[in-house]
Image 1 (tube, one colour):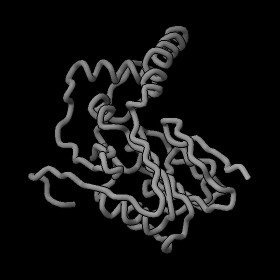
Image 2 (cartoon, rainbow, N blue to C red):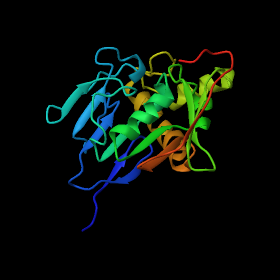
Image 3 (cartoon, helix red, strand yellow):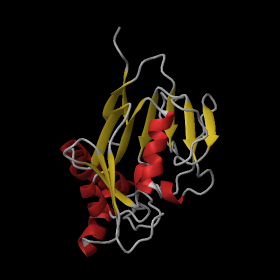
Length: 223
């Protein structure tokens, strides 16, 4: 029997999920995955780290308010866990990774790549997340901001033209024709090519167990 495939995250990465599997979406936010049976998020009212987008609660799914670093679920309660664009926000990556492996049998983690973090410099992201040669995840603490300076700010404003982003300035046109044209240009000349390049996202699927490494700034106390 053919296993259904689902696109996940901002990358369009495809994952296989058996129809009988129980699926958890960790940090479901404003865009919960349609295949998830259970949604988990700790920010119901504070939408700062969702760029001002309100949380979406699907009435057909179970919603749980909770922290991904200490989830109120039993061991191996879920067959698959989706954790899309949440790992870069956590305070303690070690607890986060161990909780995923405790609660789930397998899963998928997606974050911005280190390249994307340097390019976009999102103020609420705490970690560069990428894979190493051994096939594990690396969490490297972000300590330096605005590495690209003015060039980075201009690129960000153009990439997110007509899109509101909390904590960052973008370009927005009130004229509907300019708004339409500028949005199309940004989509086809910036967004689509960068996503297709494969450089914007870290896509990591795991089964049973995965290795992880945490690189902290020596001047920063342990969280």
